Image (cartoon, rainbow, N blue to C red):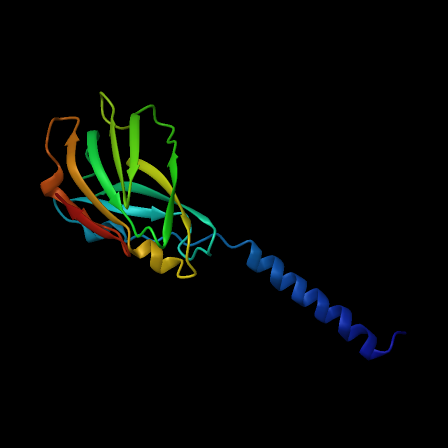
Length: 178
């Protein structure tokens, strides 16, 4: 039989390894408000983050998503938007593809990225576009809080201008309509 003190060390090591393994399997939190905050004909817009607590040097994807009120989200036929950001805190890394057969373009100039897209019968998903940024500061989450989204054009497949119905549904990001 092994002395008691010889068993304690391997058991502690095993417990520590188990805790590290459990923590490494956690998914990053995605920030968004529930759809119930919208009412009537409102159309919510949220910026979905791939990582809500990024570290310096990591790349974060940001998806602009429409969320509907109880009566649903209208299909978007076309949009033009601008995302502005703090260039000291974030570096634009590029546009990420969405697999819905819509046509999209993006153009980064200075502290903003202009994006546009269309689909003849309306976008198949509620995701309008997905962009990525590299975090340049240790402030991580605070750097992402500075993202601002504005739409200069947003039309449904039924030719309705949706800008007057837009409401922010994002928990942490700014949202304006021009």
